[in-house]
Image (cartoon, rainbow, N blue to C red; front, top):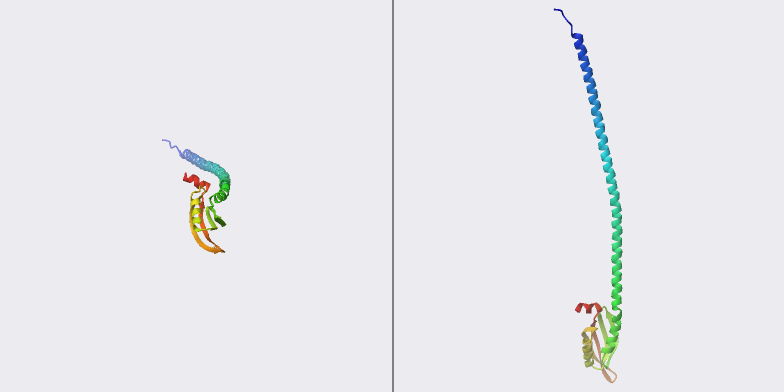
Length: 187
């Protein structure tokens, strides 16, 4: 039997396999590096897109906050204007009250009663005066009680004094003026 030496063929096959393995290994490494680079690029793109969206949202939020501040300023201005309008309306309603007060005082003042002072604080009125007698002060209180614009007469003091040959009664009476808004609430 002849002896055939197959060693060089096996050696060539082995070196070819090692070369193929090295090429495959290098290809795998290159493919893995390419996959990592592509993945990093994809994630980088996703991150930059999300950052762009976040920046847009931040810009929109800033614009909305400016709008909200402007709206709040307008609301405060509206409230101030409404308060002013309400004050003006109250002043317009109260304009005839002083006329009614003096008209009622002139109509309700009985004979023999003279006023020396009239002081108004809000709807409360203090009347100081002189009457020929204390019964005239009582008549004044009845007249005030019958008035549509004046209510709740209360006597603080009635003091009889001597003035020359005649006697007179000095008095202080408190009463309330009926306001236009109070009248509407009663009805």
